[in-house]
Amino acid sequence: MKQYILALDQGTTSSRAILFDHDGSLCGSAQHEFAQHFPVPGRVEHDASDIWTSQLACARQVLREAGVSAAQVAAIGIANQRETTVLWDRKSGEAVAPAIVWQDRRTADACERLRADGHAALVQQATGLELDAYFSATKLAWLLDNVAGARERACRGELAFGTVDSWLAFKLTGRHVTDVSNASRTMLFNIHDVAWDERLLTLFNVPPEVLPQVVSSSEVVGHTHADLFGSPVTVSGIAGDQQAATFGQACHSQGMVKNTYGTGCFMLMHAGAQAVASHNRLLATVGWRVGGATDYLLEGSVFMGGATVQWLRDGLGIIEKSCDVEELALSVPDNGGVYLVPAFAGLGAPHWDPYARGTLIGMTRGSGRGHVARAALEAIAYQSAELLMAMQKDAAIPVTEVRADGGAARNDLLMQFQADLLGVPVVRPKVTETTALGAAWLAGLAIGFWESREEVAAQWQAEKQFEPLMREDRRRELMATWARAVERSRGWAPSGSGV
Ligand SMILES: Nc1ncnc2c1ncn2[C@@H]1O[C@H](COP(=O)(O)OP(=O)(O)O)[C@@H](O)[C@H]1O
Ligand SMILES: O=P(O)(O)OC[C@H](O)CO
Image 1 (cartoon, rainbow, N blue to C red):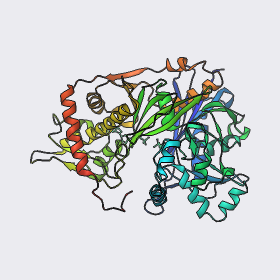
Image 2 (cartoon, rainbow, N blue to C red):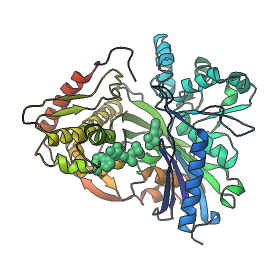
Image 3 (cartoon, rainbow, N blue to C red):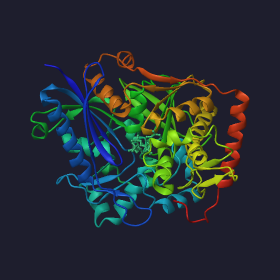
Image 4 (cartoon, rainbow, N blue to C red):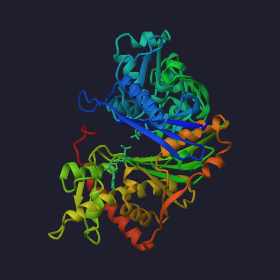
């Protein structure tokens, strides 16, 4: 009877389930979108039960459609949107409030106050993170303070906190766990000690009774309730989605880098067996813990990656479909001096400027739609190049290639320009579902479905490699012009209007 690994990829806007066989080939997938709630400006919520039911529905669907029984699923691996915060009643298994999504800014003021009181250094040293509303700690504190009776109930041990991995593992198996990679995004976890940090629990006023048990990213954490899939299935892999994608891109050794070109861009570099503190406003984070060894990553993200192309489509209406951008951009030989800084929601790493705003600059009477399309694509590459430059400064590790995935990585023009700007090859893999593949590998390694990391890494195959063709002096000139454009975009919005 052929055996499979089932990967659950619980993302911000949809849940997906993907089946892989022993060769690492994709044997089926299903995807269900679910509702996004924006109750007031700055707030983003998910109904935790939607997360669970959509995830369960696509897991069942992919098995049904592939004609695979639960007995043929050797293990389940979970990858998930990170930082999103769920608080639930241990007994009823129901969330006590809507989940607060990572994009939610309601605790920005609380973070501002903590920074003003001088706590950012402790947070950065212990967690590797910026003291920001992005991470779970202040979201959890908000729930404890604003849901009637929550703090008292939490202290009595009646409530459980978790990120989405934790919520899914609880629903699947009844266990209250989280893996090290997800824990490292809560802002409550000491990435050097690989344990919850009491100083941070005190700082954010979080009672230890609510915390999940921390497990490694590749170990048996439990078995699914029999009624879910017909018979119990082992759950043996968990990682945050960006870490899972890094694992699935086989970036398993120091200096290897992947960049995901989705709505935003997430670039992660393998930093080795010790956390590398960033001096360039990147994040140090746990990659995964496998077989007792913890690997660390450096992470940088930009808010507007493929979303810049969506803006061309929905905001400007100059293309009909995202993929049309390539043809429009190719209708001109170059950007004609036009630069687009897509700081529509401020700038992420390495600038972290919530007051920056979108800037289109360098237009002349000869500028047209093609130049704007070209500038939009180039902006994705420029922002990613800034991340890699910051990483190389922090880690002083030579980078020999960047592995690309995500929707916009399908764009050959973008990939070529990216390689030109970076000065190293950009490589697109055959299996682009790298998040799910990483979760599958982690789950399969734990149960001996695959023997070693070397074995799974050997499954990774390049589909296309883009070689850098640009001369070094031209690259420097372009990056310098981009830096001038970024300067123009910064600090534009009035103070207090940061998003
Ligand atoms: N051919 C293309 N060229 C450039 N961008 C594209 C192309 N196809 C899709 N995109 C962009 O990729 C993004 C979707 O990628 P995806 O990895 O599915 O994102 P996410 O997981 O963040 O939802 C969209 O923002 C879309 O505009
Ligand atoms: O759900 P995604 O793919 O947009 O990923 C979200 C990230 O994990 C947030 O940190």
